[in-house]
Image (cartoon, rainbow over all chains, first blue to last red; front, side, top):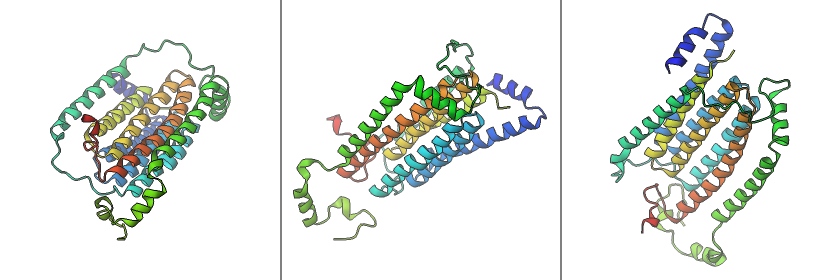
Length: 217
Length: 101
């Protein structure tokens, strides 16, 4: 922290480029921190999901600032456009957008313990960021970040040459995930058309009856 | 000209801790899942920052793969959550204790 602060004092001169870099960092950090606190503190899950979008946009801004253009675009498309929408779909599908009840919770007394544990984690992470000599110097890829060519081009070349096998394995991973999602969400084979006939005939259960917006059958 | 790397690392550490706090404190399974996404995002920020500090594209490659794995993980996790909610309504993380015996 002290090191970072002294860095700040020495580098944030009157230079306009410097000032704009700090402005971008401040905006991105503020947006992402506000979104993060929103996710943790807001009671309504829909608001939490929208705060998550805010964090994602802030981090995408910081990605652009750190010359990770492609990843910023993918961050917005995949996280903001797909993952959070999936969260919202599930929230709406299950009707769990009620406020979390502040009921008597067995584990309520453990909340301070959780906060202390997180603070310890934060302090150890901050210590780790100040340890300067843990980089071995060995390059993880053949490409330098500041080399010639656009960021997208270099990233694509790296993924399709050095990381080709992992890339192909991610396709297998995605197929497995899709199959897993279908298997998990589908009703089991024993509760096929027969039980569906039964559920259509029987009166609504307590689970269905108190869900808001469900038409009474 | 960009802000020095340690500032980004500190921001990522704080984001990670906020996400970890949420994961431990919240009881709604969906919100806990969002907190996991928050932690993944902060680690992505760390990767990109190290890619810049060490002038190495490997960090950005890692973030690419983290994004793919996160997408797959969200699909499977939300499938599990839907399956849980289908069995019992209004389930929080404390209610899912069938394995306790």
